[in-house]
Length: 382
Image (cartoon, rainbow, N blue to C red; front, side):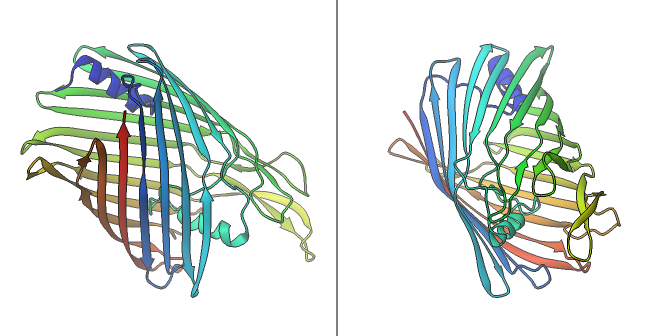
């Protein structure tokens, strides 16, 4: 189903999570991305939404070296007790250079520039907290998290009928001040990510499997209590994913699934006296959380050269505190699709989907939710 070069490129993308440099063709993409939910009573928020205007640019120098830039303007809102809380502005900007050192190896170096405002008021922090819920699937949950540099290398080879790939990445992160009016400097822990992938063709179909291990160093904080003390140790994460692509009805269909498993973390909690003066501290376990996803994407011909690409997926999240509480667990089913269009050399991808599901509240009740997703992506190549 795939040529050798296509398979090696695909497995490198799977393993490294970085784009394979294309031929010397520039591209720029933008659009509007909306996702919003309304919740029944019981969650503390009646609605949540995010509107993004992303900009992505690819600047290939030649067939081996390319540069990618991504940024966006984001507007997040939640409704709480009849009031609207807002967090808006540009997000951090990502710049990445990718170099295809050999036909089977890619090296990349990237930087995240803190163009977003990571210092939030209490209300803005609440908006960011709601939008960061993994189950809801908002595209951007943070506006600014300080400067960071990431380096990665990915290699892939064809071994018999199989394409094999492995990649490693390391992210070094700088500090930033997350809270307005509070003397606190926060430095997220550096990240190590290792990923392996394998694929195999079967006549007119392809099976792809992947696994990713993620480890974090301690998050450090400097405040009025002490300098450079450990605040949080995130638990290890393991992601397993699989996809099966096949031809049917004149189009290509892909069935996929993934699971993100997160261990308990350790969070430092200050112990205070009756005057709220810290007298000691202790570590408590944060919730263990698993997220399972699965879905299908296909192609249905509409005639006249137009196609409809249906997209249905299901997300199931389980969340367990150290005391056994499972608030935040839930599920969401989403269905819809897009219609790719080409107008005057410009690619346009209008997409719409509806989401419905439920989230477990602090009282143990399942609270229903309804969401709508609209996207309009424009891409120009030259």
